[in-house]
Image (tube, rainbow, N blue to C red; front, side, top):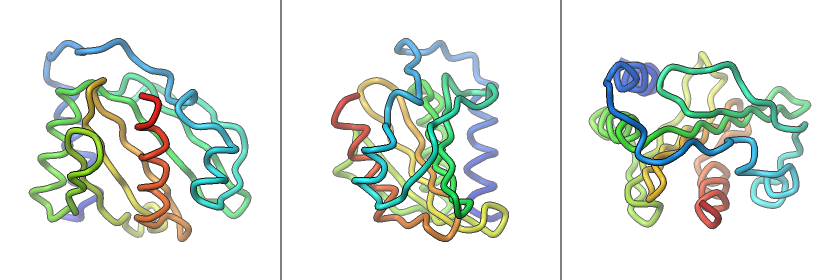
Length: 152
């Protein structure tokens, strides 16, 4: 099963759990500014837009670049992020022990035009960061995650 599909299935499965959120939701669009995105990644994007509600997500936001690259940040509670991380790690994701309490990343697949997906469990719950498209590298996604973690 492709890693991206496993990631999505785990996220949806986690949403079906009746775990209460451990922390109040954060506004995903407030976690990054266009200037921070440009500084961390070199990518220039339009203003972030909240996305439609996702099962298991507390908040999400998408920034779009002129070349079609999309940056998606999703805030989740700790219970949902734990399930997502376990699924990613079981599917061969790269662990990032120096980020949050626990973090894992995977390369995107053809459905998303490539890119990179990173999930981070931290003291406030969890956040998933994806850069979808050819510009989505692990290095750029990690830079955004580090920016987010400095003020979460």
